[in-house]
Length: 445
Image (cartoon, rainbow, N blue to C red; front, side):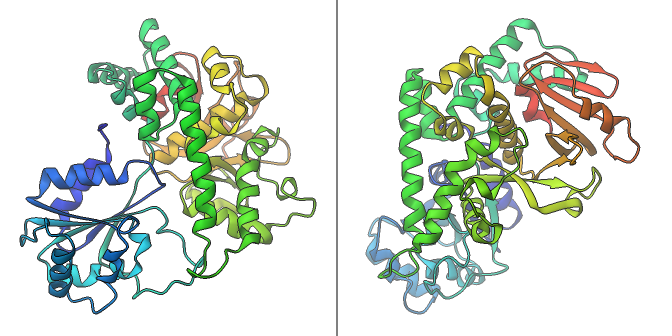
């Protein structure tokens, strides 16, 4: 079991109001939701009642009648003889709750009853309007929703056994803007490249830690990619006895498969004509939203101006698409890409790969993603609030200063007054430009 930051959020939920709201953990499949929830539950409760609605079809029947808490707990006790409902000392874990809409509706009566805490996990709870399966409604006002992402770089370092003193030293160097020692800097660059290739799926990380074999990692990632594509079809099933919407399924697959080529373009905004000759936004908006709601992609919107609030300057129909997990993105490229990354020889795709990993890092910090591009060619990779001030962030796979960066920093019409340039170089400060090694993106919060 790897150490995960989300456990702290679970603790905060329990302290601040576990009796009033159920905890609902959303996120991609296979990112460790169930294992993290069960680790927390077993450490904090005398009794844990675990129900997996994907594996146990009979459990769904318990929620088909009225949603009286006493009746539900009696039926669950009969179905699972080893569980015990101890008042004020029990947590009920509804795993894969998207498979049982009525169980989610039962959250309200459970919270109003107040005898038991409830934690739910779900991979597709953000999906709305894609199926017609009926339930008794979503318990508005009775859920504390937390979004879980794959492991971030710091969690990856923990998994590799890197000492906390090393991470504290890096934080100190970042705070003081002082260079990292050469030995540690080189080691961290190597670890970051490993993380870029491996990604943050816990099982893939565990296989890498066990074997140090990128061929094993690649195969595990291919399996995940195939499983996700299978899921595209499974979750578009409108009713249990009806066929899926094959037009939408085809569009979802075309959008997902096109991401590497979209990012490799010089102007890497998402272009519908790359999907089909007469591709139009209205034909693909649902497919893109579906992938986003699943947590599989990140959307980075262009801005009309570099000013706050960023959401207010967002251009809705001009955006880039990144893959949520960098390891999956690398696995979507030709086999052997990971070896090239580790050797530093990537050529044409290098900028796309490093942009994707920084987008991935920012997303795992809970950020919305924005960039800035004008028709004149002026372009900034990311625009974000860092430490309370608006900043532009440049991701440079090659050396050299950006003309666009200078233009923005020297123009009073733009609110950003600092640039963080992420590259393989060590920490350095030159006026309004702060150079940081890639691995320090985790500190830009």
